[in-house]
Each structure stands twice: as structure tokens, then as C-alpha cells.
Amino acid sequence: MADQVAPGTMAHQGETGSRELDAQINRSYGHEHFSGRPASWVAVVIIVAGFIVGGIALPVGPTWWLFWTGVVIVVIGGIYGAAIRMFDDWY
Image (tube, rainbow, N blue to C red):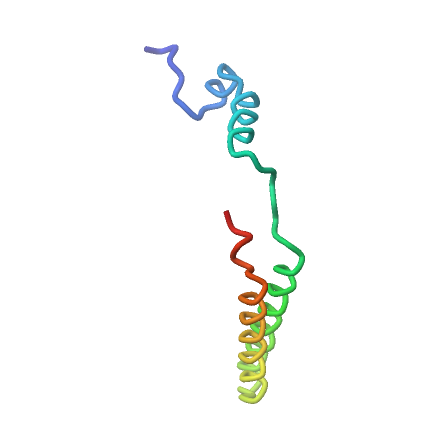
């Protein structure tokens, strides 16, 4: 019993050849690491910019016209993201 190693420990991974196992797993999925299309990142940047604008507007006043401008920017980014089918990047 003392020489048994729990799964997930370093000794267990060394015994089974974790690199070989990782290579087999990645090969079975049949795709490489993919971080999204540039158009999807543009949509994310637009949405984050809208959140920043709206977030700055609240503690500075609140300045409601600037807050609603941020909301409009977020909505525009969401519409753009839907138009380019941003969620098709997910798998």
C-alpha cells in the first residue's frame, strides 16, 4: 500500500509519461490551440470600451449621458459580435 501513488501526483505523471498522454489527447481532438478570429477580438474590445466608458461615468457624477453612451457602445459591440458570429469561435 505504501508504494501506491495517487492519480494526479507528480510521481504518477512521471510513471505514465504525461507528455505522451498529452500528445495522444491533443491528437484525438484533431485541432490546435485557437484563440479566436481578429474580428471577434475587435468585438470584445468594443464591448470592453463601452463598459469602461459607462464605469467611468458613474463615479464621476454620475454623468448619465456618458453612462448611456457606454451602454450604446456595448450594444453596438454586441450587435457587431452577433453579426460576425463571434460565438462560432467557441468549441
